[in-house]
Length: 247
Image 1 (cartoon, rainbow, N blue to C red):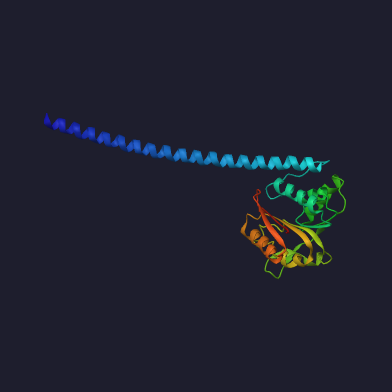
Image 2 (cartoon, rainbow, N blue to C red; image 1 turned 90 degrees about the vertical axis):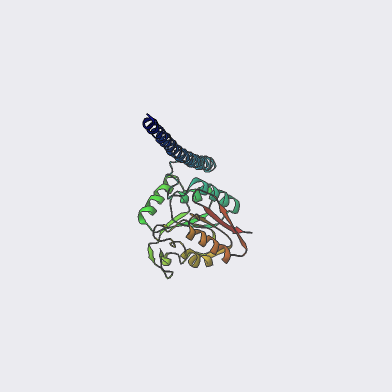
């Protein structure tokens, strides 16, 4: 009888330990699941906030510029509405006579509609240049030259726009850097400093997209260092925007 009682006691203790272990495992699983759900909810909240900010900027943009035909999609590898809205504000404030843009697309249309007197848009792709010209024509926009400058080997060690296509450019009042594509090389845009710094007017403004990437941020800082009479401002846009403007 005593043997049976001892056995039952041991079974009971084993059962208690098993239950405790199961409860601990369940607690860990619930905590992990709760943590994952909380993280997912926070990420969704952040995405919703970003989307709302882009919608806000987009509605302001179409209200200010009054497009008369459809425009291509924004965001992704294309300029985002927050950047385009800042560009519109800079153009309306500084009234640049000559704007040079590296990388054509919807930004070309926005720059022209915002009031740029003369715009030269540089693109390495014939295909994209043709699409941009067609879009500008559809919107009745004039005074824009979309110039094709294929990527060629550059002394910096990366491929950059064929510099022979830029020989006549000088007195740039606004420079927008959004090309060549960063997928070609992390330093794909760095030759812009060497090739275009000397072509800027004294009161030039430089706007750069994608400065959340280290190489683009470094390029923005290099431009600012080379222009001591200018100030560098980083905007927390979707992909990060740098504006280098006169003090």
